[in-house]
Length: 440
Image: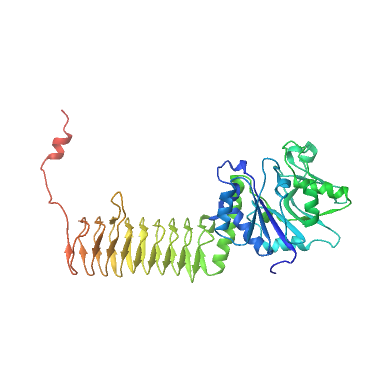
């Protein structure tokens, strides 16, 4: 199902999120590499052509983050000084459509198909629907007080709840469906006569009841609609998102060993048959094609095709590795490797290395002089001996051997077919060991 006619969406994203104990706005905390509010916006745009985001705390940061990813978003600045709270957030909302779906920006697990089920639960004569959760531990949530026949009496915020009300497990999810005209009417009738001195959106339920308008409830899935209020809940939500990502990848033909130990961001693309071993982390705009990523390796925004990476290799951003073997404890940064073997313990930074070249253990491309970065270019069929340092900028042509332990200065001119050796003469001082360690 696509866009729902006559539906506007309001995403509440103005709060500071003090329980996160962070300078970063709560809704910009990331799960699998994506700010949590982005998940909500993405699902909202699947069902509505009028998506409104209420911003407040560090509003410019929130707006910039969303605008960099999404188009056709309406931003509304909440007056936090005079009209704090969820009710105050909606005072300046001017929805284009008949119905308004209200949802919090800190619910990154939300799915548009579940929102559609919620919307479609509305009876013809019901003008307000409240999404509720049944939680084993309701701490931090507003409690939903109902009559014996299941009708809502009121919603009470935890700080204002009696001890009896705090024992209620039915809580407000923060998801509402309400007629736009009713919403506009009731937000101007709200007051802030409560312990928080805030305008509570939850009070519209009591206002509606006084007008003879009933509010129906719809039980939502905790796993999909539970909000993120602290770092523990952030971690729990991220694990659910990672489960979704890993499941999708595996169903599309990639084997993942011990999936719970593997971190893969949503932006990573997998093509063909791949194998991911335990403890792997893959970030950013990485693309993995018909490759194996071995245990403990880290890949950041890089392209890997028909290659083996690791164990415990680090592929840093902007690297492209094709038909190559990058082995244990090798670090590659902003480099292009094609048909290369780099077995272990090497650093290859700002380099371009061509086919059938072997990089020995401990090889370093010294790419930084303290001020600028320089490039190392290595041709085809080159053998670089262990513990060699190539000081960039330097170019090694095809069919060259670099002797183990050599240091190749920058801009060294080397002819194809050469053996290059750069070592100091061996000195042997007899009996030095005994003289050095002899105690007086």
